[in-house]
Image 1 (tube, rainbow, N blue to C red):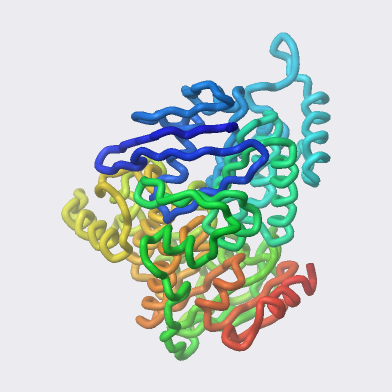
Image 2: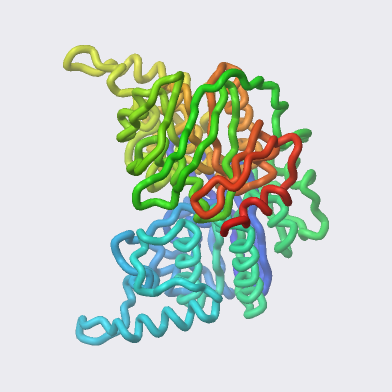
Length: 493
């Protein structure tokens, strides 16, 4: 047995994150770990990786008990982790990020030529086409994810943990990732794969362990499992429908976009209409201009030409502050980088966008902040020990709910959602879908970017397809197929 996890427990203030969890990982196998957000999957892996220290229990690697004081020691001993939330040095190059802390050279002089050669060798082995000298901040999220995978491989790891690695990837990139994972498995690596995507789990796994509320529910061979069985194990109940009934009724036009183009961004001459009470999906491949469209609407990029018309008035959304005043709200794709304030509490994260409403002269009303935070926690079913809990200690799904609550408190008319369910389990997804539909029924208008085509078909009323920074088609969700969407997405790519 390559890795044995024995009776691991971990407690944070107010919550028992892990409760006597045990499982085994064989070399040359893919062992998937599933569970709802907050089930303890990532916490267990962080204990293995040296980010957290387990309160009790032990890890046994190749017959030897190990306890890593930090991530560096874990990697030096053959344990690597590709995190869902990327943690990279944005201002440094790709190769510097890969070899950070172990630059080749002598006498404090870095051998950049060797570092470049070594990076190229790993990229060639993995089939990655990225310039090793490119600055990390210039890459797409999917490219940065590939850099993290290359970094893990560069350590010649025996155990590699993948935490939601496909959440930012296109289907072609997912297929490429699976080829890499299969190659690593065939070389004898033990792969621990965390994902909420049932089809992926059943496709690539040898064994599947399911966690719920910090406990191990069970481990079974993937060949014995079905999607329905996994969902039942995860949530402890039958989940009859993945998507809520779409009972919102779109009305009159709420927003008209005419010939919108962005300066220095991949967005050219986009025109469409959004109706009140409508959920409008945006589909397309990575680099199609989906995020660029939302950023232009919300004032995060400079509009070169075109008009944004809301309620018959031209909106000049020059920045996010103006956009918020004009009734817009935006959830960004990367929670950690541009969504949450990690060192602040749940309350501070909920109320930060609405801070002016809490002012009472020179003072701020803590009572009103507490009341609004209570509303957000209750209405969105946020799992948190309390309002003062640091948001970075919550699961990804609960962090996303907090951000939803933040923007709902600003009472927007137009919600711009960029991959709102990325890295979120099936139960939490359903709650967010229901929230979106309820908001649409109240007359709110929603634009949602998603890389998951079944999600767009299951939640949206209409779907706009983008390719090469332009609009390549418009489809009624109830009358179209994934194949039709993909054909339009590849039109100008």
